[in-house]
Image 1: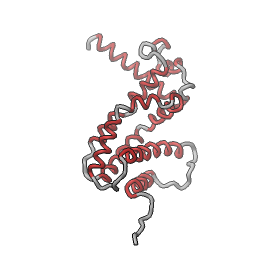
Image 2: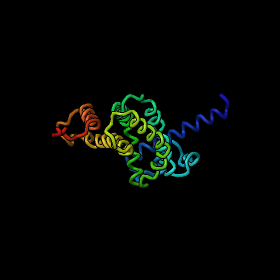
Image 3: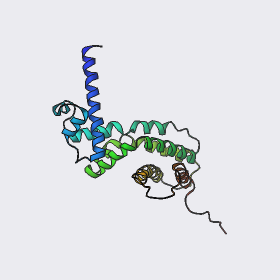
Image 4: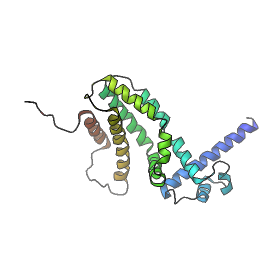
Length: 210
């Protein structure tokens, strides 16, 4: 391996060690409760070594959000859903997004930190790249048919994302600690099936017309 490539590889390992240490500290101690010295210690490097890769703690945090929130994976996943009917496409999107957010639950903690410390500015800036993919998916859902007429595409999109993100965050809250906050909770599968059913059919009982 050429010397430059070895140096680049070693530098990338150090960079990833810094990000790994910072993520763990941010999630455990909060943004303001984490210092650059603690990050250096967690990455097992000298404090000055951090500044070879990042200029500040905020830059580290923004890099974490940029690299570890799977924006590209979400866009690809939605684009991969075949056009069948609108309800079926929403069903598949819900299933896939729930799986992804469950796997990436730690990253939602970073989103919460961004909302608290930076007013969500980082996420807003970075999410701009995925908005066209989300809108394109919603357009395909409406074009596929099978939905009630007159429902705005933005409403559909916000409902879908709210269910996915809200469920994941609430699940972390309710399942944390020694005792569940809600006794006799149904299984995660049952909850997801119930949410999916409401997404598809609504919550109001059918009313027979005279």
